Length: 500
Ligand SMILES: [Zn+2]
Image (cartoon, rainbow, N blue to C red; front, side):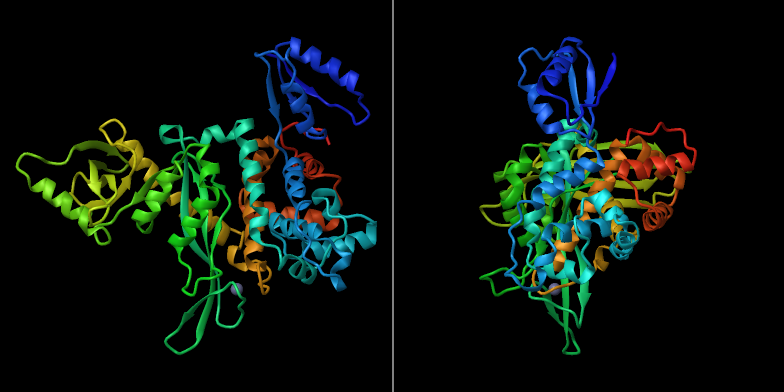
């Protein structure tokens, strides 16, 4: 199959475009649209054409420029909260792009360096890479973004997920039952006894002082076989209007479900979560929103369910269905024992939700030492053919802990160290922008062979970001492609540069 790369110029007239598309349609070929053109318009034209061959495939390249473009499109729709005064010079759009640039480059001083570059060269990477028209300072970003609710940015996550689905990369994340596994997890990203805002959660300490904090429920697509994770829109744990009591993780998870459960249900989602989430009202809401769940379920917090299990096992000749496998881990043999049962009550009471329960125990064959024990509840009907896959899905939650939140927290993304707190939404909005920056890097890793090659060659994450920081401080690049091509050429790597 021939691959065409069509580069349609801005001056390309519709008749010329039409003839080119006619040719491509007839050629029964696969082709890609260059990111320099308005792919969405061209795609709509292609899909609307009756003569477009069923054998032809459209692949819209999801590129850095396209990602920034999607983000900018959303920013165009942000309400302007300013009431005149000092902030009129700088647009909220530039503030949001500026914050994204800081998180994306992982350089708190990125904007300051770009302002100096503008003075020296008359242009800067803030404009060429991120489309910032007038580079704001950090205090300006804080003032401009404080009134902007993070919810205003959530559509970007949905748009990108839709693009990933349409372009194909999402398919590799599909796991058990061809669904996407989405891990919900609460994490604290800020705490202080001094700095606080109206959105802070509060806790009275023994010494009489108050601890202020911010927590968020992150929703992250994971796959047992992939190292990458995809963040979806989060839900913040914070005092809710009209409610006196403190917010909590489960209440936040319910809001997440009510806000976007139905939208994500179209992707066929299985939610993963810890023992906290194996909670009847939450599970019922999940089923109502037409999603699935696999949640950890511990004996201490689910006594009624485990009483049932004891009762069932006490019956003569009625052991729970059990599956055993032997695994060699390279050093010694492990015995993996799965037990499962369908239709057990999640809690006490007549209206208890019936769930399906499974457990995995791993022991060392030679010594009998128990290496691992965990159990889950799910709405999936369990049988000998699927119990291993369901347990494997439940266990893939660890990716959120080790590669999702901890990447954001510990490997350079500084989830806690976003650069401002504000009085209203700033802390949450900056965290959302940080998640988006993380999302952008993950997508580049998935779709851009030059990005993959560079990251592989440079090894440590820190090296890559140090290089980006230094290069963008001294040189002005025409585009992200230009920057990547420059690095590849200078390092003499064997990847052909993409057109700039
Ligand atoms: Zn706060």
